[in-house]
Amino acid sequence: MPTCLITATNRGIGYQLAQLALQRGWTVYGSVRSAQSAEDTAKSLGAGYMPLVFDVRDTCAVEDAASTLDVHLDLLINNAGIIGPDRQSPLDMDFQAFADILAVNTLAPLSVSQAFLPHLRSSNTAKILTISSQMSWMGYRKPDTLAYRASKAAVNKVMQGLATTLEPEGIPVALIDPGWVRTDMGGEHADNCPKDVAAGILQVGATLKMSDTGKFFKWTGEERPF
Image 1: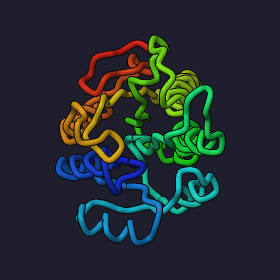
Image 2 (image 1 turned 60 degrees about the horizontal axis):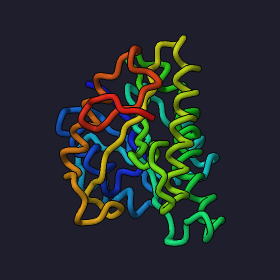
Image 3 (image 1 turned 90 degrees about the horizontal axis):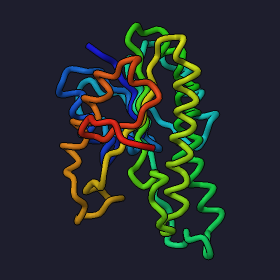
């Protein structure tokens, strides 16, 4: 059965992804930020779930976690993400918060991918999938939540570059748009059920092919424009 790593598995889409993967018989390694969260999440998800404690913003902690792992990984899902503060418009920007959003949403997926790449390389079916957003689309001109939008547009470019770099090794890398999801981030009035979205994301991740590398997909499986 496949082995996967999912970042930020203690709640939201990450928790649903971990739960669904476990139900399918997968082995799941999931990142959480504290020992207490690791204990709580492991108790909730049950057998087959192995927590890894690290903050995705801390590259040293990410590398340390990777060094303790002695397994191959068939799928990495970069799920961790934050939407940021109220003040993120072009004329009223919380720049410190903007930097933190970039650290989580843009830099961390690359850091995690680099750190765990040896584990992916030891699999014959390795894949990397990063959760982006419909708000990254360059066709949107809305100025609200600008830091979040910019961070997701940036991670699209970062992962596109990683896809090109890993193409000779046969490791596909893709991005996925989860839509507007009913989570703590999306709110209770969002369009999509997190369980449905998790099922779609996992399906895209499980079936990702080299012909898909560098592409951007909706959670329902259709390719979408950047």
